[in-house]
Image (cartoon, rainbow, N blue to C red):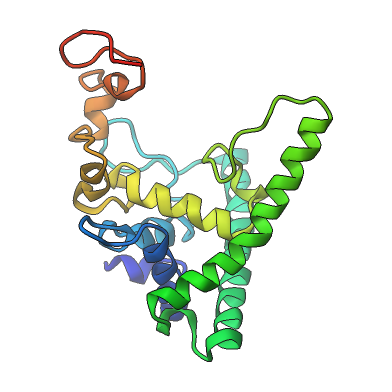
Length: 220
């Protein structure tokens, strides 16, 4: 079955989100979100709970059951709503500013619309950071980090999060087509999840400060 037949978005929504993703990680001298199929990753993720947990041996997926399944359904329902509302806002702003739907705009105008939607989010993040700093808290993590809970994010940072995930996640989840995201960052990656699960592959050499391939301490 074609991935788009099994997805959540209708064709109009899919084109809109794919166009936005293509501006967040654009195609230049290297592949971007479009070539990596980031939209396929997101479309399948929002289609239900059947592709949440990949089996350790890389043979497919193990859908959650019981209370965990219900929790995931609730989470995905919230994220779906955020996308419906966000897509509507994206196109409303595009029509108001330029008289066309977002996907029909040239790249510079698409960037303008995305910047408009990013602005309030950055203002909120700055206000929160200032308030916490004044209160004596340790400075929080930078905005748009992937550690943030999906259900707490506004549409724009949620879209950024999923674009990154669709570009860099293991290909079994539907994105990172032909491992192009890993190629862009010079990460070879395991041949399958089974290789990583069995301990035959480790990402440790790619962490800052870890030993490099020759066993010497990486420069700090």
